[in-house]
Image (cartoon, rainbow, N blue to C red; front, side, top):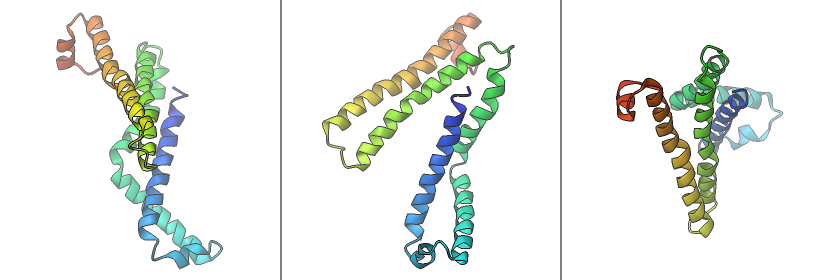
Length: 165
């Protein structure tokens, strides 16, 4: 769990940096004079106010993903270290395995941005991404339900309908 928690914090910071950069690209064409001189006291105040404004917009626009990225480390660490909750370690390991597909999704997007969409590498990366995404996200979820079904003595369909893992 201690390995996975920093990832979620890093991801929030990376999402904010990307959001802030996009905001600056869209809004600073008219403020070039204000942003060019970093030593100017007014500029520093402007940048601080702008950062606060962007942060507020980021939180409003990305509420759900922020809740996801904050709740997993904040709730996950206590649950995974509770000795009475034996399956906690397994469930969080499976949860982190779901995130293993993220680099493949990201790399495919990077190739797209670089204009490599028509290349063989892009096509191969798409196939690998689809396989890993299926394995890490879809099959993994079915496997969790199968384990819960076995534990409860139910079929997978009964488990899916009657409980949340």
